[in-house]
Length: 407
Image (cartoon, rainbow, N blue to C red; front, side, top):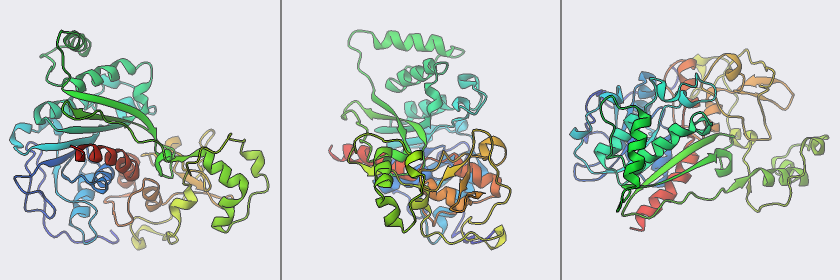
């Protein structure tokens, strides 16, 4: 594969032990608190955490291609990550063998059981790993926790289970009994929380965020749940820094087009309704902004730079018409074919539709250009589409890091 970098060493996967390899470049010494990243995927969350000041040095994932990506970006000359990779089923991890104090436990819990495009099986889906995230919290006692998931959790049919998850996160030590159903466990937690003198183990904050509101050139709605231990203040989510209203004002005034050296569309005012008064935030970043400076994609994968080549066969579907250059991208999806795959296309200045290159989708997910993805197109598309945008993770994590620093 093009642009592969030789590993400086090997990192052995460990499906049953969370062991920390302190010989790896960037690993924390034995006496230091550590930051742990579950369900690390391609590393989008870990990159954002690192930029915010955390040091996620123990990374877990079950996907072999994602783990290859993580290892590559730890061991390459232009590394974007540090630490060690543990490949395997997190359900088999014995957390008691991790003797380090855990400062942060973070993870994008697999979203398929709750995705609007999935089978909608929620807690009945074998891929539901919320119980494993809560088990890790229960056994590791981290100082703070950050969890990300899809907005599908807020659907009326899923909301009771989401509320149950939030109750568990507040007092994870009240663990389910063997063969106890989640509804019975939920009722037992409720009674515990209503008992005299009850004190929560964690203070729980959650919010539905749009990545575009925080400087990502993509409309991507995700739920973030942040926990702080009882001796810390309650976490407060940062206010949005960017807005659609500001972008429309920039475009209607002509400043957007002048700054980019392009002609204002003749029918612009017919396409953009008046958004009301300017809210004084920064304009949403657009696809054009995100892709600025990228070279033309190669014509074939073999000659490509950093996953950047032309992908033929793009077409639009009813209700799935792709993205505009002068608006944030629609949500980057993890599928290659079919209607969901039809979202990963863009209309260029000539009115032609084309697939984003994989590097372009990585840009739209705010991955650094030096972050390389291992695997064929199918595997890379899945890694990028399932990732947490690094910029959004950084903004959410920075407020958390500053809260810890005040202590």
